[in-house]
Length: 438
Image (cartoon, rainbow, N blue to C red):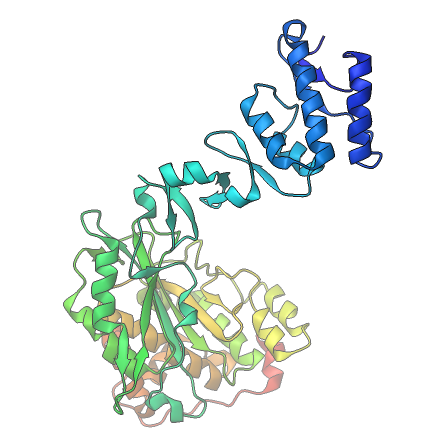
């Protein structure tokens, strides 16, 4: 005979018929067989019959506590899962404790690692609750240490927003936000490094004395032992003031020297047309501009910031133009959010191409490059989306104040920048250019 106890089949017919009748009455006619694990059947049949009769009574009386005690105090095994059995026959939820392997009512269930459940006893003796993760972790788990200054991933938006700046009065108003990833050396505490960072640049006080949250730190699963700094969105002037902290460096932190870290700049989609967005993609992805893009990005494309041949393969543009609204068209300009330019976000374009950096002038150069690219592509015709024209644009008199870090950076990289220019005139874009972008 099988090593499974068959309560309803061929085990003392009379007793089984009585058990079956009681269970059927309780389940209102449900005649599915219930199977219990069985070992050493010939020596254990009386024990199993007593178990079956008791279980039938508990089901009849809706006594789930008695049923739980019966299961946890006996050695009878269930073919399948005791928790599934209890969920089927009682109007409550039951679970199997991962550690002690007993069955419990839902009132004692605790979520461990967002992966399995443990009972109250095991949670109290072997685990601690992680406020950061919102689940229970083992007492000795150093990877889930609690942090005062590092928040959970993608939670900073609750406290970050717009910080007023001189750029608010410009038409159009175009603001930027920053995400900067950094690794912390093993000999340093991540939370202490985040605390020092936030103590120095986390808050911004405007000329009227009003204070705003400028930056917060978050966990990032792509990092080994680090965190991501996320800023509010504001003008270049506020960023220049707050990020000046990096002139003194952050001891124990690296970014550029790590293969894991990126610097992502978000810039407004305000007043942006589909043509404008398409020209930005063409400018960044054009192989003829590779030297410029690589110099400012400090890396070639990666799996998280892909650069593709957008001139020869125009599927991306056809998909976007086929959408009904401008918002949908802009979001459809790239199917893969892990491209050098990501249009998938609702309100911003994300420049993902930059490698991480903790050097003040380099961070500011990336912000200025993003800002300059937004306006350069807006004002340029398709045929003028070249490195030569971009360098003229950032050196134009009206753009010099917004590109001082960028110009110094590119000059140090060996680019020949024009001397001070008069206003640079660009042919105006027209809607018909969208059909000629490719």
